[in-house]
Figure 1 (cartoon, rainbow, N blue to C red):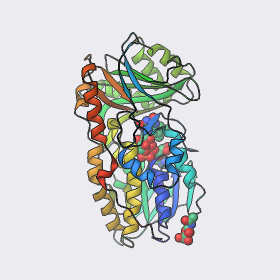
Figure 2: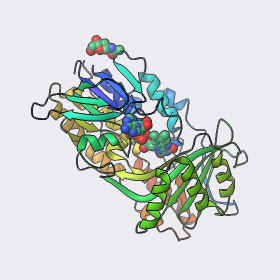
Figure 3: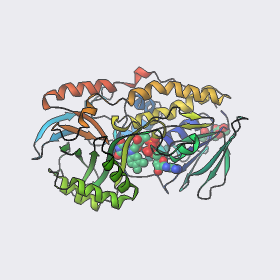
Length: 421
Ligand SMILES: Cc1cc2nc3c(=O)[nH]c(=O)nc-3n(C[C@H](O)[C@H](O)[C@H](O)COP(=O)(O)OP(=O)(O)OC[C@H]3O[C@@H](n4cnc5c(N)ncnc54)[C@H](O)[C@@H]3O)c2cc1C
Ligand SMILES: *[C@@H]1O[C@H](CO)[C@@H](O)[C@H](O)[C@H]1NC(C)=O
């Protein structure tokens, strides 16, 4: 694909991974990111299954990730008095992951690793503080796409535009000609991540998780940099549109408004909720997002294609990062394989990814049960993900169940591509 001009929009996980593999295949890559720099925040994400497969095919990546994985021994579930009633530990074997992955890494660190692997490549250029304003696709002639930018980067032609700008992708709306919220399947859930100065776990390395009625969950883990890292989640009945509207409108007003919304929701919920809220107010790295799945009818249109959360956010299953990494690899690989026939490459991408997406978007059957928020089920929440419910008795069973449903990436047989230039 010598000199194929590829525009990638978004520099988090999918974007830099796609840049890496496209450049390997000989393309000229431009990555535009809306933020002025790689975004540092976020909590832990998991690399699992096909994500592990691709990571191991990326020279140097596994070592870089291992150097940054969270010192994470597992997680315990506590009651309002702080007494644990169940503990899940990492398996110690990356091919046999339990709920606690062996490759658990801060999203910002993973993003930085991927950026560092690509930033000095002469065929990749990053443009920060920029986004797409318009795209003109010359469909009839199957010609290139003319892209105009919002903040001064000169309008240019690209052979392929790859949207990697996350679940609420604006580029998807432009490229597919739809609304920003079209194809987003809400589950009436938000999640917030932040670090606190205070160590609310008093030195424990084992993460702790607590749930309160009203669909309120909190998980805290130790922060290597000191203090704690906290995840808060609000999960509401799907039919309560008032609540949906209220959290979306608070979210739309920005972090300060949303923090207030959260504080109100969690005040007095028990365990360490009040301490966590206090820490959240002064936190330097607050990040909140709605948890949703993205399910467009097709991943491409002409020379426009979706990768990562923009195309198949997995929401509460926790498969999103692995899908993003695998999707970026398969897209570049299929286009490289079908040299000179972009349409065939895009079709190959969609066909290869479809079964993997379907699998990793499957919400485990236990999860919908916990969405009924007034129950007294024990819950476990992490990674912006509801994994799981259990009575203490079925903990073992559940752990096996979830471990199996992830399993090893080998079962998908991701193709090896030759990457000829
Ligand atoms: C700041 C942040 C924190 C996160 N924290 C967690 C977490 O703690 N746990 C977890 O499981 N998942 C988290 N996620 C989501 C997780 O990273 C993704 O689900 C997954 O890794 C797939 O990544 P992605 O690259 O497809 O999309 P994303 O990670 O969502 O990245 C999208 C990127 O595109 C950029 N962008 C957005 N709109 C535009 C635009 N119009 N033009 C140009 N660029 C744009 C964004 O700034 C971002 O860098 C976080 C995402 C972000 C952005
Ligand atoms: C950059 O692209 C040119 C032309 O395709 C190629 O010859 C060169 O090897 C590439 N550089 C890198 C670092 O891949």
